[in-house]
Image (tube, rainbow, N blue to C red; front, side, top):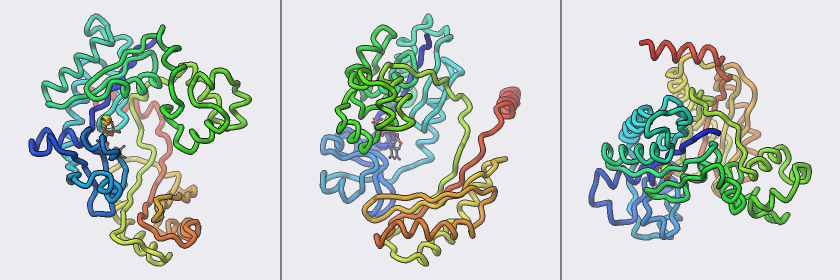
Length: 353
Ligand code: TTP
Ligand code: MG
């Protein structure tokens, strides 16, 4: 049985701002993109009491909480904090899978720290983070990634939750399907309409029956409802795609205007691509977000990142708008999976250096 810890910083960007600027500490605070048309990256817990959430538009957030203070993010600072927490993790295990700047899985099955107690290791890591960075983190400790990730949310903020192997069944049975990664609001609604609200409901069904509702996702869903997740940590997480996008200062309504935005974005995409060494392109795509916040992506196989290809994908994406204004245009590239051996060698070289 494995011992997995999922660590997640509490209201990460907002917490860093509150740490560095005391005047933000006791007021509802959000960290946002630029301009009144952007969306929030995150907000502190005071703001959450009003219903304000990550990815909410600034306009909606202000409606819910008129006194909300919105500040610009400072990515360089968040990155620095992120590097520091990763260094803390590495004191306890070399098996680390970062998921984002503020979140990672740790496999401590064979760690000797804290007499091998995953619970104590998680406590120690959170204490190190607090002492050295003056920020709080929450943790989930469980026999696999799926349970650990859900558990880290249970006692947030500044808490941890241990689901030992003998508690897994009780834990999943009571679990709402909403909390399962991969089940968004639409899938949840669909499952509910068939009478499935919790993992206990799924356990009482069969893969065959679930396949008629959620297709290929059925097997994974059935396993999750039984608390089963055999995924290993992806220790050398590979970048699988590159995306660059811009939220426009006013909606645009013509294909030609979209093409102009693509023209502006394209050199930026090439700049970012140049920084990623040795990536083999396999896909190009274009993303449009409409003024009702629905979005669409059109992709095609491609071995290069030609501007012309983005332009040829545009009409199809544009047509899907059916006259709606466009508030965001994005360009994406998909990369081939790197050869595992090559990645391992590259890492070995790095550690030797
Ligand atoms: P999360 O861990 O999802 O959120 P959080 O740390 O702000 O809050 P919680 O206490 O619930 O964990 O995301 C980490 C950071 O990533 C978050 O501080 C800001 C950024 N982020 C975005 O920029 N956009 C998003 O839509 C989300 C969800 C997060
Ligand atoms: Mg977080």
